[in-house]
Amino acid sequence: MQKNFIHFRLFEEKTSSKPKFCVTCGLNATQEALFNVGDGVILVEKYCDAFAKNVK
Ligand SMILES: [Zn+2]
Image (cartoon, rainbow, N blue to C red; front, side, top):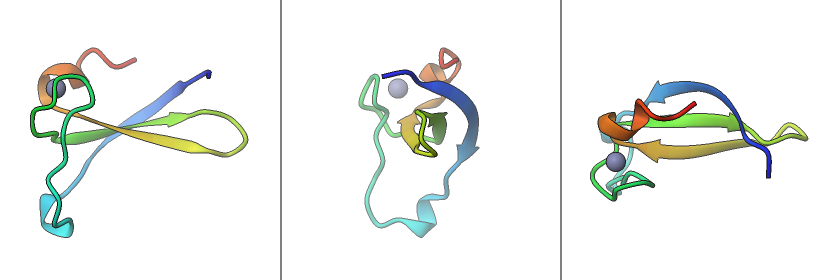
């Protein structure tokens, strides 16, 4: 599946009751990376600060 990185957005913990975890390391996530995977579909993955730097 082709993923084209769009941008990051911070998400607010207040708006969610569930903790969010980084998809890479499993620590608490602080931001979301949005990817366009085609056909108008947006994929969202959560990352902590450390691993967010590696997302392209
Ligand atoms: Zn992480």
